[in-house]
Length: 304
Image (cartoon, rainbow, N blue to C red):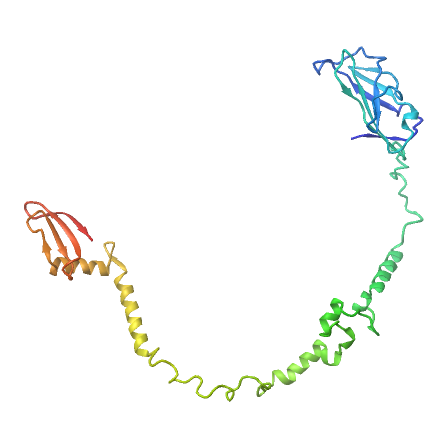
């Protein structure tokens, strides 16, 4: 970040720029460069030794050089500095931003001039008056504090569109006697909540306007939905749910019944061969395959 210096600064100490000179290894301080000539570049111009003095040793490789007052002639200039010799690496020095104010004067910066009696400071009353004037200018004072009179709301504004269906919306068409929320509520209390009947506007749907016999029992398909059909469907759903419920050794009731029926009443094939197959009641579907030993003991049972 550039250092700030007052344009045409007359104090030579404040015009000093500083360098930290190191040897080629980048670490070892170089202490023999007193009298060396640094360079400056103003606003990105060519490097030049004009406008800056020679190096003065501070110690431990640190040096300073003084900028000429003439080099600080234009507020806004940016001055870069550099130094390089056979004993040092390329070394940038301070970067200077020339400004029109004195950054070394705390009063000029306003740090010590915040007294309680600044003539240009607005009083609380002045600030309130300014805010009120702005509200009046926009007509917003009529929201709460000032009665509405005349044409106070611009046509087709958002407020006008809330109360008017005209195009463009006209605020002046609003009649508080009939259009206010209170008026609407009163009409509702008197007409809607106590209504004994509903009048249908001309062209509305009435029983007379429907085609004769438009919807009748005869128009529906015969027994398209009957108590009997509903009962049968319900019974089937209930039975299926019970039969498919897993209830016996990991098998559903339906599967268990199929196995029992096959082994007790189904056709048997492979008798005395060591592998017996029990078919379902249809005589075809294999339900149980049993492997038996020479004495007829079942050694393995597979369910299909």
